[in-house]
Length: 110
Image (cartoon, rainbow, N blue to C red):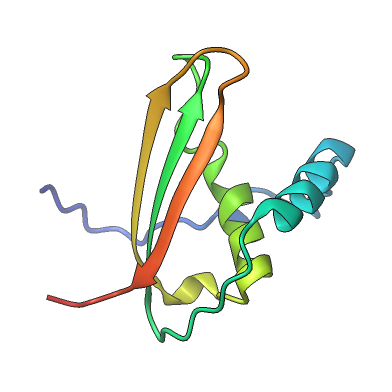
Protein backbone atom coordinates (compact mmCIF):
# COMPACT_ATOMS: atom_id res chain seq x y z
CA UNK A 1 0.00 0.00 0.00
CA UNK A 2 1.31 3.46 -0.88
CA UNK A 3 1.14 6.36 1.56
CA UNK A 4 0.98 9.97 0.38
CA UNK A 5 1.45 12.61 3.06
CA UNK A 6 -1.31 15.08 2.30
CA UNK A 7 -4.70 15.98 3.70
CA UNK A 8 -7.51 14.38 1.65
CA UNK A 9 -9.72 16.97 -0.07
CA UNK A 10 -13.44 16.67 0.66
CA UNK A 11 -16.17 16.97 -1.97
CA UNK A 12 -17.32 20.17 -0.22
CA UNK A 13 -13.87 21.69 -0.71
CA UNK A 14 -13.89 20.91 -4.45
CA UNK A 15 -16.67 23.26 -5.59
CA UNK A 16 -17.74 26.80 -4.82
CA UNK A 17 -21.29 27.79 -4.19
CA UNK A 18 -24.43 25.83 -3.50
CA UNK A 19 -25.21 22.68 -5.45
CA UNK A 20 -28.84 21.89 -6.19
CA UNK A 21 -30.46 18.49 -6.62
CA UNK A 22 -31.79 17.80 -10.10
CA UNK A 23 -35.35 16.57 -10.60
CA UNK A 24 -33.86 13.22 -11.67
CA UNK A 25 -31.89 12.95 -8.42
CA UNK A 26 -34.94 13.91 -6.32
CA UNK A 27 -36.94 11.12 -7.99
CA UNK A 28 -34.04 8.65 -7.57
CA UNK A 29 -33.77 9.53 -3.88
CA UNK A 30 -37.53 9.21 -3.32
CA UNK A 31 -37.64 5.87 -5.17
CA UNK A 32 -34.65 4.40 -3.32
CA UNK A 33 -35.96 5.50 0.07
CA UNK A 34 -39.09 3.47 -0.68
CA UNK A 35 -37.17 0.45 -2.06
CA UNK A 36 -34.58 0.15 0.70
CA UNK A 37 -35.49 -2.42 3.35
CA UNK A 38 -36.67 -1.22 6.73
CA UNK A 39 -33.79 -1.89 9.11
CA UNK A 40 -32.29 -0.41 12.24
CA UNK A 41 -28.56 -0.35 12.87
CA UNK A 42 -27.34 0.17 16.42
CA UNK A 43 -23.62 0.29 15.69
CA UNK A 44 -21.17 2.97 16.76
CA UNK A 45 -18.95 2.35 13.74
CA UNK A 46 -19.94 1.01 10.32
CA UNK A 47 -18.52 -1.02 7.47
CA UNK A 48 -20.34 -0.74 4.16
CA UNK A 49 -19.96 -2.90 1.04
CA UNK A 50 -21.50 -1.73 -2.23
CA UNK A 51 -21.62 -3.41 -5.62
CA UNK A 52 -22.88 -1.45 -8.62
CA UNK A 53 -24.18 -3.40 -11.61
CA UNK A 54 -23.55 -1.16 -14.63
CA UNK A 55 -24.61 -1.88 -18.21
CA UNK A 56 -21.74 0.25 -19.54
CA UNK A 57 -18.11 -0.75 -19.02
CA UNK A 58 -17.30 2.97 -19.28
CA UNK A 59 -19.23 3.77 -16.07
CA UNK A 60 -17.07 5.31 -13.35
CA UNK A 61 -17.25 3.39 -10.08
CA UNK A 62 -17.21 6.57 -7.96
CA UNK A 63 -19.99 8.55 -9.70
CA UNK A 64 -22.95 6.84 -8.00
CA UNK A 65 -21.15 6.44 -4.69
CA UNK A 66 -21.83 9.80 -2.99
CA UNK A 67 -25.55 9.96 -3.91
CA UNK A 68 -26.10 6.37 -2.76
CA UNK A 69 -24.24 6.90 0.52
CA UNK A 70 -26.26 10.06 1.16
CA UNK A 71 -29.50 8.13 0.62
CA UNK A 72 -28.35 5.32 2.95
CA UNK A 73 -27.59 7.95 5.59
CA UNK A 74 -31.02 9.49 5.22
CA UNK A 75 -32.85 6.14 5.33
CA UNK A 76 -30.92 4.59 8.21
CA UNK A 77 -29.92 7.68 10.18
CA UNK A 78 -26.23 6.94 9.74
CA UNK A 79 -23.70 9.74 9.83
CA UNK A 80 -20.93 9.01 7.34
CA UNK A 81 -18.29 10.13 9.83
CA UNK A 82 -18.92 6.76 11.50
CA UNK A 83 -18.21 4.74 8.34
CA UNK A 84 -14.76 3.27 8.89
CA UNK A 85 -14.53 0.86 5.97
CA UNK A 86 -16.06 1.13 2.54
CA UNK A 87 -15.67 -1.54 -0.13
CA UNK A 88 -16.95 -0.65 -3.58
CA UNK A 89 -17.00 -2.85 -6.66
CA UNK A 90 -18.64 -2.89 -10.06
CA UNK A 91 -19.96 -5.58 -12.34
CA UNK A 92 -20.93 -5.25 -15.99
CA UNK A 93 -24.44 -6.50 -16.72
CA UNK A 94 -26.89 -6.45 -19.62
CA UNK A 95 -28.99 -3.35 -20.33
CA UNK A 96 -32.09 -3.20 -18.10
CA UNK A 97 -30.34 -5.46 -15.53
CA UNK A 98 -28.56 -2.68 -13.61
CA UNK A 99 -28.60 -2.93 -9.83
CA UNK A 100 -27.11 -1.84 -6.53
CA UNK A 101 -26.21 -4.39 -3.84
CA UNK A 102 -25.13 -3.29 -0.41
CA UNK A 103 -24.37 -4.58 3.05
CA UNK A 104 -24.12 -2.56 6.25
CA UNK A 105 -22.33 -4.17 9.16
CA UNK A 106 -20.57 -3.28 12.35
CA UNK A 107 -16.98 -2.14 11.93
CA UNK A 108 -14.54 -4.35 13.75
CA UNK A 109 -11.06 -2.94 14.19
CA UNK A 110 -8.26 -5.43 13.88
